[in-house]
Amino acid sequence: MEAAIVAPAVTPFRREQVKTARPVLRDVSRPALACSTCHQHALCARAGLDADALPRLGHIPTTRIRLRKGDTLFRAGDRFTALYAIRLGSCKTVMVTDDGHEQVSGYHMPGEILGTDGIGMDVHDSQAIALEDAEVCALPFDRVEALAREDVAFQRSLHRMLAGEIVRERNVMLMLGTMRAEQRLASFLLDLSQRYQVRGYSPSEFLLRMTREEIGSHLGLKLETVSRLFSRFHQDGLIEVHGRIIKLVDRDALHQLVMTG
Amino acid sequence: MEAAIVAPAVTPFRREQVKTARPVLRDVSRPALACSTCHQHALCARAGLDADALPRLGHIPTTRIRLRKGDTLFRAGDRFTALYAIRLGSCKTVMVTDDGHEQVSGYHMPGEILGTDGIGMDVHDSQAIALEDAEVCALPFDRVEALAREDVAFQRSLHRMLAGEIVRERNVMLMLGTMRAEQRLASFLLDLSQRYQVRGYSPSEFLLRMTREEIGSHLGLKLETVSRLFSRFHQDGLIEVHGRIIKLVDRDALHQLVMTG
DNA sequence: CGCCGTCTTGACGAATCTCAAATAAAGTGG
DNA sequence: CCACTTTATTTGAGATTCGTCAAGACGGCG
Image: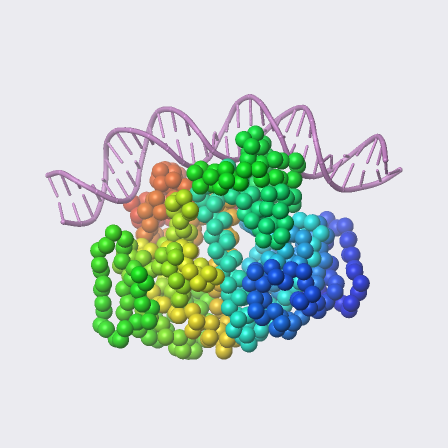
């Protein structure tokens, strides 16, 4: 049922792409990788999970996991054992209501931490899926906690990370509760822009990794509405759209839109 | 600006009810109260902040704070120093958008913890206001962290509490993003019902401490819509409404409504 | 008693969803 | 690499939900 988090030996690179009805769970490889060799360690620090404690993070045996587009990292009901730091690629997290409706609760980029929803109940209540080929580090949570007990700085940054999650989600609530469709999409684009910029990518031109439907789901809108808004923003000279390539032409106007309504 | 969290000596009971334009910040009194004497400690455990570690919680010098209806416990921008456990009464937390719009992000009952939003930035980004006369315990966060380093069980429950917050908020997102007005209100009522029940109150009849406008704000609806829905639910025999007294007549139907839509 | 904040209710309009059809893009097998 | 299938996107027209504006009722309080 559950794929192993404890990875096998240093196998070069396994691809267990079994085509079953449900997507493959995950693909384990390359155990115990030092954080210092990770391209994302500056961002990982930003996400809060190592901060000044980078050297000591070595104490946590991280397992590198490869995901192919569409692979599931964990799903609701899976036992929680580890947090996952994205090294490469991007993921979405999805919640499912009792009546089967889905909502994309977040879109996650390199350096961000996934899986916090499992801490409370020792069971994940959401699902994480790769939006493109990706690589994540599994951080066994008992080891994370152990390190937090030893190292004050690390503890602080763990707490910051968790609290950051709370604040971020509250802002999504605020968006869903108070903004109209236009404003939601504009603020979504600006959020992406800012996050790409932090990662050294162009803040004004980027590739959406989600479908219109997934974007809509995240924003509480239907895909048609998202599509129409892209068209309208284009007509109004705010952005350029070529399929999933988005270019922000008039940032200020987008900001204005979010504010003014 | 900020009221002291470090309480003065055992002053009997101060009421610094200064009537200024903005509501009084808070009212400090009765320092260093043992958790074991608190009526809420069973619930506080549930909220996650003491768990098995109850006896050791004595190591944290808690300050009891009295709030009168409408008083602000903390507001956005206040420096974060402590978490607050509600002993008595209830509070709402409010977020404010850049353009001045407000949203009630949560409604909180005895045994619940407030203030987690401040952990990340050392500054609160939301506001907490008493909906009725209330009493809360301030738990200095540096002491909380210190205890978490010493006591594994306490650490675990602190983490559970923070993660619980994340999960709860995600569920609100889910509600705001996927449900229609009817469903939102029904699920709000059922949530309240369940939380009252846990606290030993009737799950089928209770007093709303919020105005229609506040409820609407929390659910992403206008007050008129909330009012109309109460009327409709009443007509349909789902609930009885007498001002703010609500009686759930047909729970199953409410559940059904949430599911089916 | 009369004011004020809260709540209810109606009529209307705007925003968004639903349904539907056409087009574009991506993936598949030969 | 092409033809074909599948999936994603765009766009339109009409239905629905919810918000807006407005008027009146209720209830607490000085």
